[in-house]
Figure 1 (spheres, one colour):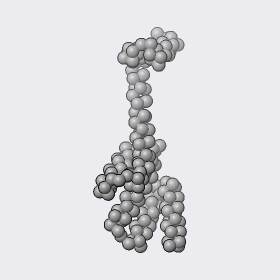
Figure 2 (cartoon, one colour; figure 1 turned 90 degrees about the vertical axis):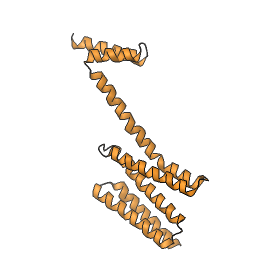
Figure 3 (cartoon, helix red, strand yellow; figure 1 turned 135 degrees about the horizontal axis):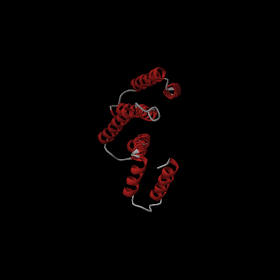
Figure 4 (cartoon, helix red, strand yellow; figure 1 turned 30 degrees about the vertical axis):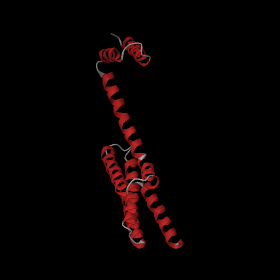
Length: 175
């Protein structure tokens, strides 16, 4: 069968599938038959691209959910900390999923940094640690952000560290 005729048939089957003129199973079978299995591989690639996007969106929602849980709910403190710890672990899991893909790797890294900062501040608040130790811990975390940003050439971590340090110094001066 010549290529022009084969392409016409494939386009027609795609049209049938999009408009639900035939059941999906029939269209998949016909596409696999006429494309010699290449259409099945393209469909699998399309579904594989959807999961990272969904997971990246889920991870990016963890910071607002954390603020909601910590500051606007009446949950006991130990449940709040357990939930935030779960969010940190979910972000670490997201980092390991996205470390091979350069497109979404930055989302779990940034969310993880913010969640660890929120978790440590809340833990220091719960333990009623004095203010100088809180400043030292926040400074240590921002120095880690800056170092990782410098080594990996992730400038958003450097900028976040600088902004956090400026806000911390402004807070110390205004106290």
